[in-house]
Structure formats: C-alpha cells, structure tokens
Amino acid sequence: MEQFDIYNSRKLKNGELGVRGTPLKNGQYRYVVRVIIFNLKGDKVLIQQRQPSKSSWPNFWDFTAAGGLLAGESLAEGAGRELFEETGIVYDFSETPSRMTVRFYEGWSEIFLIQRDIEINNLKLQNSEVQAAKWVSEPELLKLINTGKFIPFHYAKNIFDYLRFSGETNFGG
Image 1 (tube, one colour):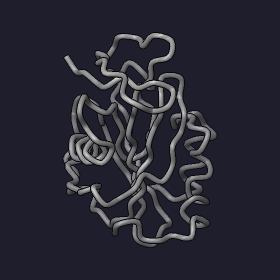
Image 2 (cartoon, rainbow, N blue to C red; image 1 turned 180 degrees about the vertical axis):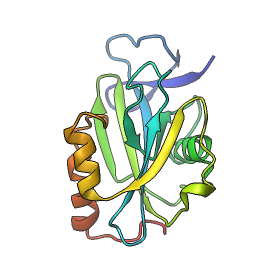
Image 3 (cartoon, rainbow, N blue to C red; image 1 turned 120 degrees about the vertical axis):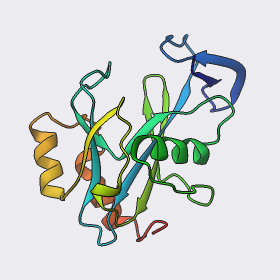
C-alpha cells in the first residue's frame, strides 16, 4: 500500500496520508515528480514508453521518469527514486531545483531537468512500468505528440524551447 502526504491549497502538509488509487477529497492535493533528461548538446530528450498494463496512458510515450511523491519524501528524494526505479539511473537531486511546477487536477507536478549523455543499452528499465526508451529530437517528439502517441502535456511541444531560452545550460550534467 503506497502512501503519500496530503497537502492543502497553499502547498502545506495537512497531516493526513493518502493511499495510491484512492481519490482525494475536495481541497486535498498531492505532489508528482517528473524528470526530463536532455543530452549534453541539448538536441535530444530521453523518453520512455509506458507498459500496456498501465491504468493511465497505456502504450503512450512519456518523458524520462515520473511518479507520485511518497509519504515523508522530499521532492529531490522522489525525483531520484523515480529516475532510478524506472531507468536504473542514479542521480542526486539534493542540489538540483525543480524547473517548472505544473498544476493538475489532484495537485502539482514538479519537473526536474538535467542534461546527461546516456547509452540506451545501459538503462535498466522497470519492467512493470516501462516497455522501451529512446532518444528523440525535437521534430521526432513533435511527431509523437501530433500523432497522439505522447501524453498530451500542455508544455510538451515547448520543452526544447524551455531548454533553449531558460538562460541555463547543462542542468547538473
């Protein structure tokens, strides 16, 4: 039974715990963390394909790794755990701030961006959640989005723009 902290609208813990799969009540929120890895040149992003058994977005392509924050876990700890669980990549996010916060119906998704050159063959994909991973260019990502094969995040089409125009490069590379 996976538990998570419940937050109020001001992003403060309210002292209650939620259980994965149980809908939250009105005024209750949770955190999800998402890690997006770009290569060092910044011209490719590492994406994963979700397993057909996933209850939401089965077989869709998604960014590198994501999942719900567990009870007592910090955003940095959750990002590191999810990245390791889904890809086998070890990364310490303790000095890496999230770069975006995206509101969704049950809470907030904190998005971490890093740049690393990683060999696909070195990934250890979490078989229960991830069926494939690959590097894609901006045109390849846009094609997946436009053909309905990528989860329709409102920021997905502009993620390369974020990297180009944020004034930062090499996020923790």
